[in-house]
Image (cartoon, rainbow, N blue to C red; front, side, top):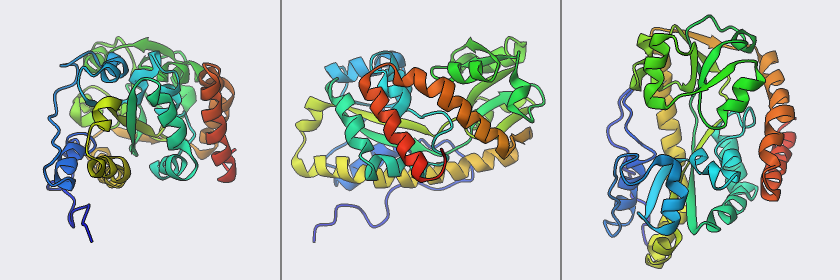
Length: 313
């Protein structure tokens, strides 16, 4: 019997917290290993081949063959990306996202949208706390009202919905904006406490609930992918989900280490407020995404059907 996956998939040495890039560099290493070295991927730095926000256009036309990206970067060209990148207060862990993708037809719906841009994709759900780093006590979402909050992409609608004042600031400038008081909080993942040293300038982080389960994507130029040998295409398209799922939970453990070591106050909002936020998202945020196209509405309807079956709506 042909052995497709190695007996010990390559993740590298595990440490309590190191941003190893399990989902991007790690996936590239896994592809080399799983294909016996027949396919290698050279990883380049973000923004070096083209601006991150232009990822979909550049992968579609073949500027480079593939990119690991925040799905929301494609939203300006493909509005479905705002839903696929993570729907506010819908999934509560990556397992629900993977279920939707691979057992409820979500992958086929998403792939249809990507294919229209000459791209095929691999979803990469990431299960870590993603909400607010703050300079003020934040025991409730109501404490955000009237405060200036750094936002990006789809997080604008979230901060507006809870009464905050969204301020668009690039990730790389969040540290300085918080230090100078330009903003009083920032929407970003808990890893930023360590990676961007935000633990030096903020007093707390909202570790629960996560605003959404992040769904990044490996985007591949369709022509380049179809030119690969059939057995390699099968490994990449069929087996990458197993690697990504394992990487999801390894990275989550690292994020938990961050939460314990950052030296800031960790806030958990009451479960009653989580339900309020989901209802708020259902009424004020989800419809804004759904109205962009019939396919966006279909994606939302499919996720809501899953949530109903799980007793969440």
